[in-house]
Image (tube, rainbow, N blue to C red; front, side, top):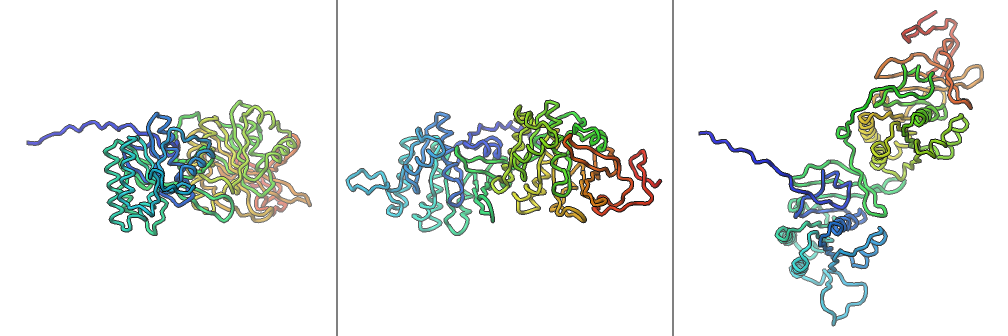
Length: 506
């Protein structure tokens, strides 16, 4: 006889915060209670800081917390905390290292040097202190000293396993810190731990160091895999979870977004649709940034928020150029409808930049995002493969939020054959090309829409002029051939533009 068993409904137990909002996001809510976790990383990666954030969160929740240190003194911890603007009030610090002052042989032996103690005695001191305080959160800093005292991997594993079973019986959540001083990765420690978080610091050829973290393992918790950039600032670690565009879809109206210039809108078949992106491609100084600026100003004139990320141009230079074109940029900057952020790619990681864009869209409500330029953004990511992948995810996210994204990419050279430092045209919904060309000893500018996925567009090449009254477009350059190639020549048989936008001989 077949027996049927009714599956019990699973109730996910409540999580506790790690003390770092970005890590809670990666872990889909935080850490499981009463478990043992391992934070590992080489010196300088932020282990002590993130451990203190974990305990400070417990203090905010009114919990008893304990910091067991075998590597740093309480005075050193106080210094770290004060420079982050924290107070260690509420955190019980138990030292197993000698103070900086000379040891008094007559004082009560509550402080020991790890090298002068047996491992069993050290472990007993830890257990006694935990039994006395009965904390809900504990940090052990660090396992390197325990490893040195153990003298053998087997004894070390047994001691760590004994600690795990003891803490499990105490209803206590524990963070173990390891500075990876052993020559090989301690996979045995990984198997004992409920979860493992790896912190890394990377030195690049130029600019500030980059830090990233990865959740190596988290038993029973769905987490966001891969590497996530983070910074250490006053106030602790700021982790920027890797963007997954599919998690951010939002319904929006599929409507045209005007540039504020009817001639440009007509070239684009009425304008650019919300939720799409456009690539302005051309040589340096040809007018790409000025064209991008018109979209930000048009959004502000409609009462929408726009943000400009300037990688190459200073704030003063951009404002001066806007004045020369007759654009009232300053009024919109003062009102907050346009936010101009100057980016230093040598100091900003790609993950931090992506988090900044998300904040602009989700908190400030930006409807137009200008990235000027991709050349500067590329300098933040030396590996082009990952640049393309990250930009693809960012563009997909912005598209799903109904944001018009404007990308500016400068090509190498000024006239003649030009090359782009990377090919993003296949990621772009629309591509607008701007070129210099020479006629009778005069350098002129040309503009043409070479791609638009979402609808019709004009196929002609027009002259592009920058004046003190803004941007003006001339008629199609029917008398010339080869304008976009940068080497135009006068055609004896000019062509006309047909009604459907294609060219035909006259």
